[in-house]
Image (cartoon, rainbow, N blue to C red):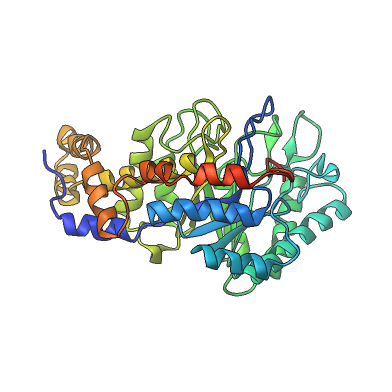
Length: 391
């Protein structure tokens, strides 16, 4: 078996890779049973940006940060964007919130009451204003709407209401702004979810127009789902707008990407690489969506970025010419072996060399731990209320 021997080509592709960070990953978050606090946890969005900037400082590939509204509301978003610039990062995707308001008990964009739907639409219009204040171009919608019991509401009527609400939001966007519609097959509703899968998301995006694309969260699928097949189909249609990378053992666990099934991450990145979607010109935004309940937060984000880099590097090592030949000849074992050979390759020396060529430490995690940043913020961030899930 062989691997791609064009090291310069592999390094050039890796050098262009970027990953977006979630602001909420730096706050205290965890499960509905217990959230464990950590000394030095940010107390506001400004301090979240400082922590996110540390990840970029040591990995070199995380120049963007997602915000969550209203969790990251500030009095002056122009000031927040300026703070991001001083830290060496930019604010990118703005995430709406439809799951923490009593009015949304029976739905938000799908609610039977037009007043509630109007409130949910207005929230997104407000998010668009935040986008424009910080220079962002993407609004991400995750819809928690659904029902818990058969007969609770009309499945068809809810889809019609959703289509109408999304159309109002889409109309409020400008020509250079994109809507990212996420999906999740269950939770918090358990009988049915209004956007449970990529097909439902895609149908709504197709109806809205070319600036509506699907956001795929790797933790939002039933066990056994072939996620890389979904990646391929959405890329084929030009409608894969974003990834939310995380890892799960059972459901939507939001653990560090690559922790549960690194081979799945490799297979996903192979579809990305083989279809040319790794290049920034593809328009696919690679993001983390994780929470760190028992592990240090900045370290957890750095380790996640490194896991993505390693999976990507292995995917780039697949000999596509040899693979294509084996596939055309029906040589099953050779074709599979080419993927396994790349997956089994230790790419850490390759990535260490890449980082050194970028003026970075070869081991980002070790370098950050040695920096003393965690001890400094633990000593200075005293008083106030630590940011956490929902704040």
